[in-house]
Length: 507
Image (cartoon, rainbow, N blue to C red):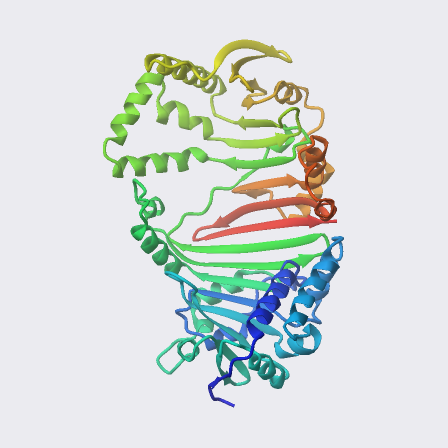
């Protein structure tokens, strides 16, 4: 069969397909267990043009290992079954049954291709699937009130709102297929295992649309963001979602022509900070990125360099020689439970800690002097103190205090006395925390990386409860938060390729 059919309006397919999409999206939060590196390109990509800027592929083989893994994860949440019941009930209201109407109407792979990014309104998109029972999909489409159009090619249904969109999607003699596009194949092939959901985004198309939107926006930036990337050009982005025994993994890769490799390093501060950190962000080498941003703004914003020189003179510091070196080494920002507010601590590793401390002294003094010159008051008062034998400066802002000093060769800024004292004591480190070890091992965190974020969800939720910050949250919601254990996200890569991944631990 190779004909385009336009169906009579009935009343229920739009809502039915929306609910089906919700079921598929929910399933995509689970996923298949990986079978090794490299993902085969989705078959549906052979039916759409290489110009398609976005392509989404979902495993709709409902008996697959991926669906079994998804169901096992969802079952760990008290309301997991209730959610499925709600979705199937919504289908029933539209005269559809998931098992008898929807499942057999979809093939083992269901894809959505955006043919153009939306400048306004809804994007032009098509749905592609190859059902084992075409009659079931015919029946499902026949219930639509919006007269969908479709064409069947080699058993594949290409469905959209209009015949023009269907014709635009199908590759003709003068069109190259997305499946044959080198950027698409390279990006999708980089994803490991067999994700239940995969998303491909064309870099040039997205960047062109972003630049167009920014040029038409009434809000204008004082400088061109694209100049920050230099000669680097985004080629593609690919993201895959899978499920594993301990939780959900999201993996992605961004291909960028002309981009240098991300600077990676081993995170050593995890052996210094306390093991009860609820949130921990590791970073390094921020001085280079900040310098590039300042140079870019200076080249494009009139009088920026002159204004910056005046600020430097007033504060008594040099941005290039004093401030940026504060961020030259490894850094960590972390949060711990505290009362009445959580403790927030920043640890920096400048090459010269003594000079870095002097720079902070100059900055705090300069800010107070500037406030006085302008006829105002300094936002804080400054005093000297000693915590656990460490000389510190205390900045009092009224409702909270900020302390800074040198601890074990690192510059430390914290909102709590314990932030200094516990670093000095060094009794239990994050690196030795069983939860941190389990989380980073499950996430596959490389020993050397460009930066990572760790969140102890289980203890974090308990801390929020203890502080009374969740007392107004519905008990059913609280019960469904309990299976959440941890979250780890990180980035790494090599020249022209940036890899990023995240793992959500579920008990």
